[in-house]
Amino acid sequence: MATPTLPRAADTPRLSPAELERRAAAIRLVLTDNDGVLTDAGVYYSARGEEMKRFSIRDGMGVERLRDAGIETAIITGEASGSVERRSEKLKLPGLFLGIKDKAAHLDAVLAQMAVSIAQIAFIGDDVNDLGVLARVGAEGLTGAPADAMLEVARKAHLVTHARGGHGAFREFAEWILALRAPSSKNPEA
Image (cartoon, rainbow, N blue to C red; front, side, top):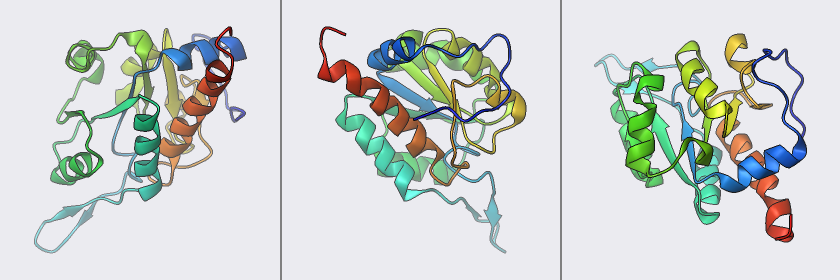
């Protein structure tokens, strides 16, 4: 899958196909932001104040497909939302990090809890509070951003999806990782 053409920052060079495959083969965890990636960044409130968020079923299938390939998924979000907890439970995620205002500062705790190294994770985010994680993960792992991510975030990502947040962006990122791993699994010498 070709990476959409968007302006990129000098500190996020395009990686060679061989390097992308090498990094994808090492991935053991996909860490994702919630609002703007798994949802469309909208929040719906009822008259009683109940908060509702829309999640894509296709993104859920992306979680399953990753799990089938031996890759877990975890959510890290600045919000402390019951709907995110419910979605995490439904998807049987091993990691849920709610109310994390400084995601970059919390990344070491995520790595420790999930028992992975920075080179073993991929991260997808959409807004400025994801930039620190994108920078750290992008140095050794893989990064992504939805089509409607903030421009400064898209510039830092290895992949900018064609899909918008909440409309299959996570699934597209998952499928990209799985496709990159396919050449390695077909040819153990690679």
